[in-house]
Length: 109
Image 1: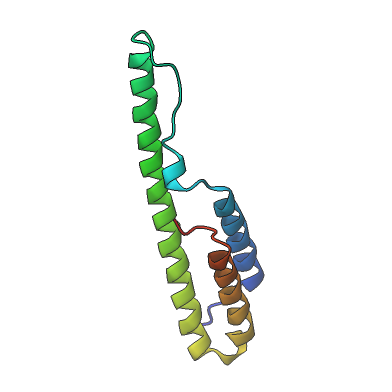
Image 2: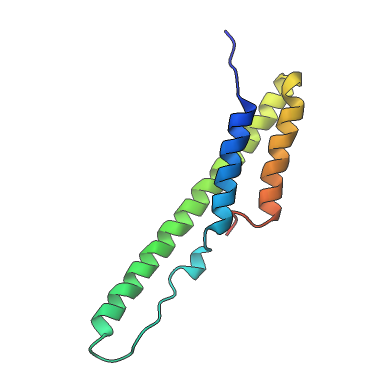
């Protein structure tokens, strides 16, 4: 039984994810809310602040999951490179792609 990996497809999908993560805000930037300070606007302002904090928490969780996924992909690529010499060049390209995203600050908080 042979397992085939379309490296171009993996690279393309990974590139799209990493590009999207570059546009993702840092979790600490999300809960910033501004507005009036009158007693009339206080209930609305409090709800906006609560929603912003919830979005910050969700953003942090998304970043964590994406980072864990990148770590898992990196480990899988390294394991595959150890067992399949023909995959070594493609594996190095995938690892370089992950490394460049990490150096660029892509998805690390």
